[in-house]
Every structure is written in structure tokens, then in C-alpha cells.
Amino acid sequence: MFLIAGLGNPGDRFTGTRHNIGFYVADLLSEKYRIPIKKIKHKGLMGQGRIGEHKVILLKPQTFMNLSGESLLSVTRYYDIEPDHIIVVYDDVDLPPGAVRIRPSGSAGSHNGMKSIIYLLGFDDFPRVRIGIGQDRREDLADYVLSRFRDEDIPLVKEACERAVAGIEYIVSDGVQLAMSRVNGKALTDKENDTGKKDIP
View 1 (tube, one colour):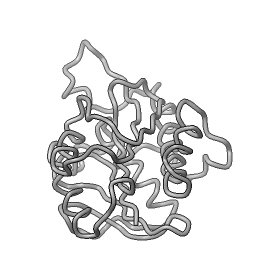
View 2 (cartoon, rainbow, N blue to C red):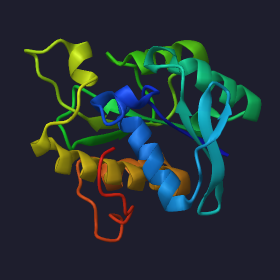
View 3 (tube, rainbow, N blue to C red):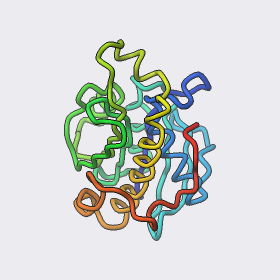
View 4 (cartoon, rainbow, N blue to C red):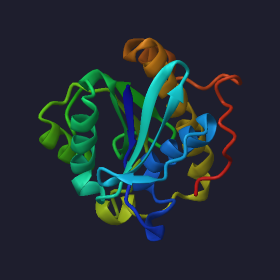
């Protein structure tokens, strides 16, 4: 079983903000594979289904970003999920809007959600999908990540989220190394770009 966790903050006030891009990707997967994310359990909203032949859990932690690790720790312990079957999707200010980077392990960088996850899980060797949101150094970082995308960035971010979905599919079906070679720094093919969702909520 794979755990696919999209990071974000719960509540309508955070819908569509840069920091909630992980939630958006989870919603794309939910729609594409008809896996409702509605069950309230393990301090998150979750749904269970399949991507291809593989069982998956889609998770949107409801603890607020800085405590995301509490939800992931509860799920991974309950279902006994191996580190290489944990996939975390989140925003990255160090990547420009539209960039996607998949890695098999690594540090949390400046991302508080990832800091919480790595601290509570006690390891960092799990795949992660980072989606670039850029940054405006003239603006306070906390204010920036909790604001909405500029109109000119929305097409880039939508394409990046669709590429992230493809990357997750590759990780589940073929492993993280192939996902990296297929997705990092590359555009989607028409076949991959078929999530159907048109707007960032």
C-alpha cells in the first residue's frame, strides 16, 4: 500500500493559496481515480482506492501545516507503511512556478510541514514531489505562501500539478528513479495531461 499525502492547511480561507498546492494535487488524484477523500481519521481527510494494481491512501492532513507529521505518523503506524511507499506532495519556494522536482529522500529545507513529518517519522528517506511556487523577497514569506497565485502563474502551476500527478503515477507503478527521469524538468505529453480538472480552487 502507498500513502500519498498532499500538504496544506484546512479551511476555506486557505483554499487556493500557494501553501495548499499539495491538497490540490491530492484532489486531482481523487477525481482521476474516483477515490473520495472524505473519511475523517488519523487527524486528516483520507480515502482508499487503487492506482493501477496498487492500493493507495490519499491523505490531506487537517492539523495545519506545521503539525502535518502527526497525521502521517498515525497513518504510517496504523497501516505499517514502508518509507519508500510514503509519497509527500508540497509547495517549494526555492523552485520557480511551474517547476516539479521528485526526489527519493532529503532534508525538509525551509518547509515547516516537511520538518514536522521528518521529525515525527524519524527518517527522511521517502519520496517527495516538490512543486515550485517561487517567492517574492519583498514580501514576508509567511504572507506569501498563504496568498493566492498571480494570474500569470496559474497556467504554469496547473501544468505543474498535472505533471506531479503523472510523477506520482510513475512512482507507484515503476519506482522513484523512473519518475525522476520522466518528470523532472520535462513537460507533460498529451496522454499524461488528462486529469480533467481545469481550475485551481
